[in-house]
Amino acid sequence: MLPPEPEHGRKTFPLISECDLSSVSHNSIAADLDGTLLKGTLSFPYYILVAIDAGSLLRGLILLMSLPIISVIYIFVSEHIAGKMLIFITFAGIKIRNIEAASRTVLPRFYAADVRRDSFEVFNSCQKKVIVTANPIVMVNTFSTEFLGAEKVIGTEIEVDQRTKRATGFVVEPGVLIGEWKKLAVMKEFGDDLPDIGIGDRKSDHDFMSVCKEGYMVPKDHFASLVSPQCLRSQSIFQDGYLERPSSYVVDYIWLPLRFLLYPFRAYINLTLIEGILKCAYRQMW
Image (cartoon, rainbow, N blue to C red; front, side):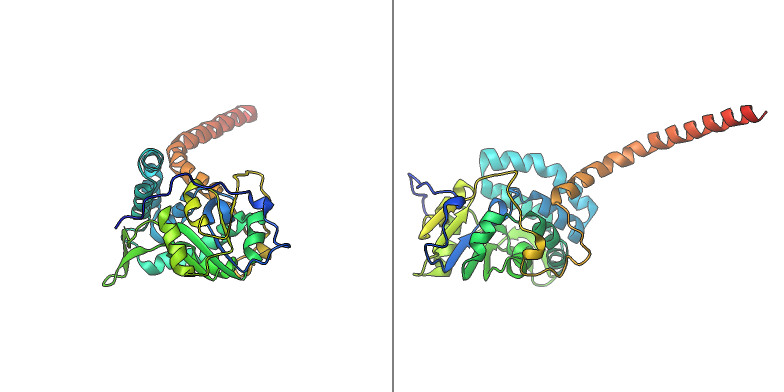
C-alpha cells in the first residue's frame, strides 16, 4: 500500500517563536518528537541505548558499525528504508518485555535532559496533545505520555511474534511513519476536528502540519533553551539527580573497543615505568 502522491508547492510555515498562545484559543496539537519537542534531531543515540540495554553490547556494536550505511541510504536513497534498517538491527530477536523495560527505565532520563523549552511550552499549553513520530511507539510511549503529558503517541509499530513474544525486526503496515503517512495518521486520529496547531522541524513534517489549522517550524538551534527535568509531568526517575545526554553515552561506548586495544600498551608502559623507578630506588639505597 502506497501513500497518496505528495502535493507540489508545499506551503511555508512561520517559526515556533511566532506562535502567540495568549491571543488565540488552542485546544489541540500534533507535534513531532526528534528535533521538535527534543533539541536533538537524531534518534540514533536512543536506538543505541535500547540495543545495548535490551539486547547486548554486541548488538550495540553492530548497530554502530551500520551507521555509515544507514546514513548513506537515508540521504541518497530513502528515509523509509533507512528507518526500517535501523529498527531491524535494533529490535530483531529481542523480547518485547525487555524493550518495554528499557523504554520505561532507561530512555526517559536521557529524553528528559533534551526537551526544548520553546516547543514544549506551546505543546504543554494545549488540552489535547498528540505526538506524531517515526520512532517505534514502544520506544517513546512511556516518556511521551508520563513525562510530556501526551494523550496519545502516533508512531511506527514494530511486529512481534505472538508465540515467542520477541520483536521480528519488521514493522507493521503502513511501515515507518514519515511524510504522507503522518498526515493520514493525524487525519484518522482527529477526524473532522483537526488539530489547532501542528509543529515539526523538517520538510517531511510539512505533510501533517498542512492539515492543521496553524503550523509552526522548530528551527535547529544548538543553543536552544532546555526545560528542567523537574518541570516535566513526572520526576520518578530523577530522584538520584543523575541526568546525562545520550550523545555522551554513545561516545563512551565508541571508545570502549579502543580502550581494550590500548590496554596492553598501557600495561606495558606502566610496568616498564614502575620497573625503572624500582631500579633507580634500589641503586640509591646501595
